[in-house]
Amino acid sequence: MERPRKTKRRRRPPPRVQPNRLPRYKRARLASAWSAYLQAVAVVARVSGLPMEAIAARRGAGRIGGELAFCRSAAIYLAVCGLDTQQAHLAQALSRPRWPIWNACRSIEARRDDPKFDLLMTSMEKMLGETA
Image (cartoon, rainbow, N blue to C red):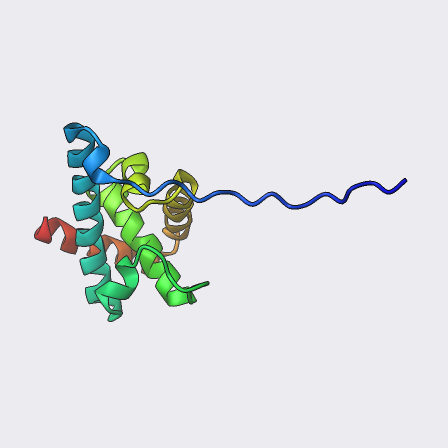
C-alpha cells in the first residue's frame, strides 16, 4: 500500500490592512507608523542615492538586491529606534509579519560594532532627528 506523499504547507501572507474597517485609534497608529517609515526612507534614500519609491515599495518583484535590502533594513531600523515606532505597528502598516521587522532591526544592530558602519548609522539618525 502506498503512503500519501507529504506536501509542503505554504504560509499564508498576513491579511491586507483595510484602514476603513479599523477603529479610529488603530488607523491613527498605522498612519503614524507609516509616516515614520517614510521619513526614515527619505533619509536612507538621500544617503544611498537610491530612489525613495524603490525602497518604500511594499512588495517587490521577487527577490531584491543586497543594497536595496540593506536600505530597507536601515529604514526599518531608523523608524523603530530613531522615531520610537513599535515593531508590531510598523509590521501592520507594511502588511508584513513581525519577524522581518525584528530581523531587520537585529541585523542592523549586530553590524553597529563596526566603527565605520556605526558612524554611518549615527549620521542617518542625526539627519532623521533634523527632519522630524
